[in-house]
Length: 315
Image 1 (cartoon, one colour):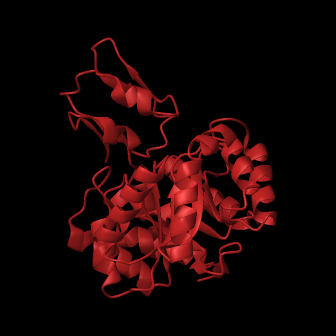
Image 2: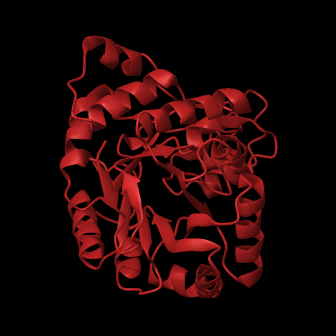
């Protein structure tokens, strides 16, 4: 496994980052013991970096793993926008992981300069926490080119978690080439960059080799978060990141496991999920139920977090 220092943070992380969203209640909702076992397998194979978020509900899995691997590098995210929400979400991360620090704490889904300006109080709070050792680095996650560009020139931001894949799936405000240029700027400015959605939320699994060839050759990334929810996925992904050729069995293991957004019959058509979806993949159909445009959906599962009827999730 290749290890890179994440920008100017001084912290070394594995090139493969474990994306934990897929384990939790927004997606597979695995039992704690089973999910923790999958993370442990990744660690045994060389992965030392895991991505989570306040939204994901995956802190219990990480807490279980930290008992055996206390040096696991953990990045979390929240929608904090002021002192109060930043304190609440950071303290929750510390309590629910059982740790006295979080390596990286990011502001979730930042769109650009104005969003960051509106959330500046949260950044100032996290910066104070960095001075106290409660966090080791501050960052943002974003689906926006403007978000990467804005964060690239802000000294207080250490880490950026942008969306990027060879087809540009999920980039909200421009082209793949523009996102590449923004990430290059951030990388040259010393920001730690770890990518998300290199497989387009699962859409690019049929083009697995091409997707990984692209993301592994893109020179301005220190790590790449990949969602995993099965031991087989962990093993195949580690092999890919270690430069091993994929076997037919490897490909079949992943190709025969396509995820989809599933909407239950009891959907009431309240449209909360429609308003939540930044990809504009959801709409209310003639039967007054939510419907999904699979070509636009990146299978993040965030829509499920606002459904009071628990009628929508990634399976």
